[in-house]
Each structure stands twice: as structure tokens, then as C-alpha cells.
Length: 224
Image (tube, rainbow, N blue to C red; front, side):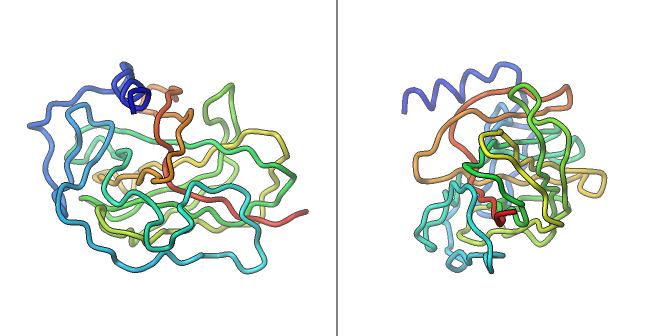
């Protein structure tokens, strides 16, 4: 726990926001004073068990989800994903890495991202690595109809044409806003199985590596 706190408190490069500038969302969602994380302080409501989306004929390449479909991720703690025009008042993109154990063709990325305020949507992309932070976009997709942050356990999926990834090479899953979600405040739910590690933030000045609890997601594909 001490290490996790140190990781969270040591992100000096993040934009510092005043708590008074932040509005509450559904389920009492509030961003911490520094804007990095979003917490739902209201009573969490289980929406439905997590469905294994897009798994027909596909193999799970990487996952941070809990195997219990009724407790797939942390309902009420997440990394803030926001746009400058949101009530958070600052941009924050978040990216999580993964390294395939074999060569695959990626088809589907499932993420646990909850909606707080603004336009209900987010952009998810698969990116190359660039020296330990996200690099060029391999494929991306806009997702709408996110579940309300503070609930569990609905996930949303980004599907696209099969994209090759190589064994032992690091890639990134990026969650961010864009022009169509310029007023959006979402939150990428953290995993609840104790998975921590390196990941990255972008507040508009480029990607910066940090560490802490990983966001809940998985990557599905098939062998070439």
C-alpha cells in the first residue's frame, strides 16, 4: 500500500487542479484535488455481470480483469480521462502497456471505462511503443454508451481489422478524449486484483511514464 501511495503522490508532472473547480457526477464521482484520479463516493450498484465480449474464436492475449464476472474491476476508483472543456478543466489521456507472449493478430480491446459528465464517449487505440511510452497509433475506435462510473461490471469494446503484434514487444492501450468528446469527463476503472506497474499519462505536453494500479482491460486476438 505504501508503494502505491508513493506512486500516486509522486506524479509531479501532472496538472494540479483545485478541488473547488471540480463538479460532482453520478454516484458522487469526484476528481481528487490533483485531477489524476476519480472516485465514486456514492453507493455502488452492480449493473450486471461482466460479459466476455468479442471472444468468439479469439484468445485472451492479456488481461487485468478479475475472473469473477460480478467483481470484474474496482467499481469506484479510476484514472481520470478528461478534456480541457470538461468540468475537470484539463486534458488527461491514460495508457496501459501489455506485452504479448506470442505473435497474434489483435481484434478486440475491452476496457472498463465509466462515464461521469459531458459527452458520453471515449476513444480507444492500440499503439506502438516509443521508448517506454505510447508511440504511433496502430488502430483506434470511438466508443459511446459508456456505463455510469461507480457501477460494475459493464465493459465496452473497440473492434477493428486484425492488427499484428509481435511476441516480446511492448504495446499500449490508450484511452483519451477527442474533438467529439471535448467536454467529457470519464474514468478508467482500476483493476481489483492487485496488478500494479508502469503506465503513462498525457496532459497535453506529451506522454510521461509513471506507475501505480493498472486500469482494467483485456486484449483479444488470434494466432496468425
